[in-house]
Amino acid sequence: MTELIRNAGTGWTVYKSSGKAAALLLAVLVFLWFTGKGREQMALLLYTTVAAICSILPVTAVLLMLYQTKFYDYEWIWSLVPLTAVTAYGLTLFLERQWKEAGSRGWRRALPVTLLLLLAVLLSGKLGGDTEERTRQDAWREESAAVVELLHRTWPGEDICLLAPRKILEYAREADGRLRLPYGRNIWDPALDAYAYDTYGEREADLCQWMDWVEQSAWVWMPEDDREQMFQTLEERAKDAVELGVNCILFPAGAPAEMRLRMEAALGTKAQPLGDDYIAFVLF
Image (tube, rainbow, N blue to C red; front, side, top):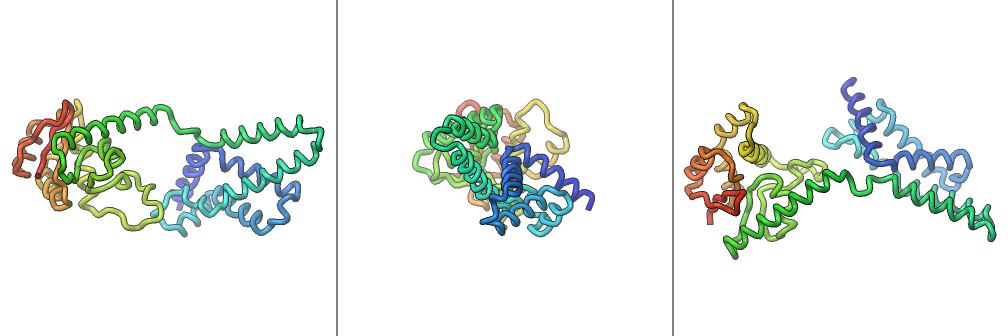
């Protein structure tokens, strides 16, 4: 129970750090309660207040997390709170009050308040996220597009089911929707599964983990335990890939030579260079 409460507290900290929308909602609730402006929508106001408080307090947040099952993370309990609707409703009533009190000649006072409120709303989000993260994603997107173009140029007209390092698969279908993949981004980003329970099986998960190790193997250093397990399961993962319909596997060009030789033996095909950074094992 202590761990659950700690997770709920940490979840609230992370949730509010991703933007100020929750803080804006709380400010709107204070305005509606103390001015009596929300009386016409009392049921909505009461529900939103109770739901928001229960989502913030660790003990009640734990109960909500248990209700929604452990499949979902903390932030999903905020789907119970009509955050956008109530915030918009409260801000509309606030601006209506400002313009009515200003009268026909008081627009010079009401307009700056409106603009400041609009600025506050805009600044409540992340405004596009972290610059370093966007730079990394842009680099991955460009590399993935270049690799996909090389694949189609080298084997034109082939129906390719691709297994490759994560940064290639991340944007491969964005570059060409005709590509088939043994698994998608939601295997390493469970948040994309949202309200679906049809998650990947153990075989796909193992294959994804193994490809992460293969990518690491091209670096200067990787944990020795991971390296040993990567080699021990090579033939098994190659068999899994084929059974999942994969007919093109990409390794980083810097992967160990032993990996290349054993993969050639397991698949019965020779590795071919694909640009300067990858080697490809094709089964068509």
